[in-house]
Image: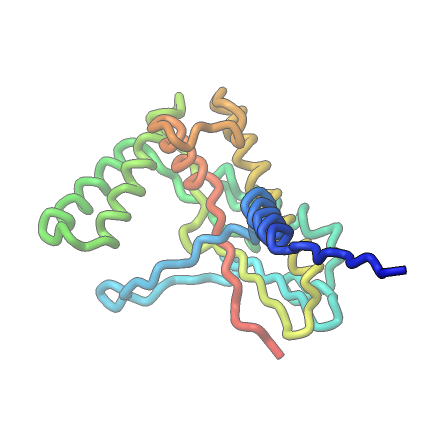
Length: 238
């Protein structure tokens, strides 16, 4: 009995189909991307007039995460659960302009006349050097401060020292988990304090402010003046 020959299967079309399916999945599949932690890097500025910068110990809150995943705040061993209260105290201890805590940053009074005087002084410098980015930024800051004074019924407010910073140091073997915990706490305190200011002014929720509108942008600028997020990540210690 003669063998029946089996015809060859043409697989050329299957390769085309597989290729089309691969393209389909590549186009339609979404990939998760780590957003990371938002931070604004400090601008490099030339020191003007060679004047020494007055940075006092009370202006700096030093947080160190060592290689054993231990937290030290101002050189003292601190549990991670205590950090939120410490950071909040750093911002609020002297917020009413008094010297309630001499170890915390001072607050300076800002009034409409003070802001108007500073704007006039800086505007004169800007007119003489209109392309100076530092002067233009400083002018915009004082205009925001003036708008803030005008927003407040008393026409004044207290502003934390311009040298007040939170200095975060991490040793080489610090775990990423502890680093993220500390960053989350710092961000949480800032956001909560800004939200509290929104409530005091009768504004919308801080996270619902329209960043695309002029009004929303102005309010966000004012909140950044009232509760600045000055977090500096210092050189890694071995």
